[in-house]
Image: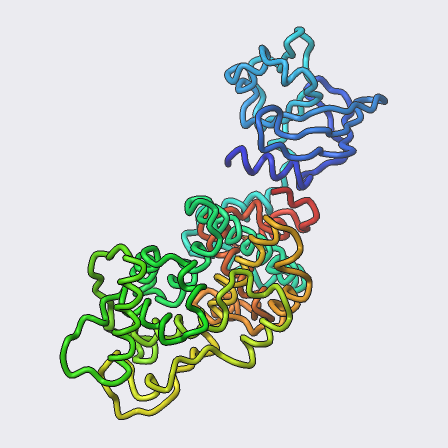
Length: 431
Ligand code: SF4
């Protein structure tokens, strides 16, 4: 038993709340348990109770043991002057006192907690599964879960937007540079994302913008910075062209050279090799050189209709300057574009909207987001196996947020499913 459960029980009134009496024997009725306070001061603010015939408004403090009131020094703290009820699991030596010496009514809650809900809480706490409520989740109404996924999807998107804003701050509020580096990391994928991000920091984004209408120049800047344009002999025509673009760029802009980077190729589909991804990134920047690409419907449908495809040179290559027998345009796949949209483009739009107003994101974008198919990964497959198939991209993002921010951290008392399982309803979720 921990104090957080007592607070949860108070918040959701999940105990026998009729016929209550205080330690002093007064009849007690809870009219409103108040708002949980996560800052300094009493645990619940602005509660309403009736003591005898008198209705009282004020704050509630919750403790496992009554003596904690004095141990925490609340009797000397004016912030606790307006406490109207001390809720304790076990009574202490004496009842709580305010700064002026007046006694605070006390409710001893141990004997009125619902033993079945308490058992469930202890079962969830002790369960070492990644999703401790796995065995009970099927009892949670589907509508409640899907509403919860939606709410968490918004939270997840907002957190991504906040991280983007922080990274823009680290780059002297250069939104373009931050956008470029976030894109590069995403194109690099799990294995080469850090290397791509590192290299992109050596390329001023205003130069990408300057040259964006020449695909070969953008490709030369990216491949040159990544060290692909150092070969001196046996160059093919495209390699020669890129090399001359790269040399022009170096002569004109004197870019700082990064440390050499070793890309990873092992256990990777050739279509995701870093060479191909750099070429796709060049093509993407050629088509969409501005951050906030979802500022208008035209860009949105452009990305859908015209996937950024590298030049035909890449049709017969998975590695730069190494011909392959397979001839196929190196279009980015739907799964990758989905990840790019969910992890970079939408959060960037939201971050820019937060910063600059409505221009970069509106309800249309949210509708688009909702209509995208759900991401398939280990987490979404687990929830599907528990009976909650993500219905769209937002639902999948909500499931990822639930899993990472709640289930793994055992925050069941702050979760809608947890509230349903431990209190039989979820209307009093306060986070
Ligand atoms: S956080 Fe919610 S969904 Fe996750 S295990 Fe706890 S109650 Fe279940």
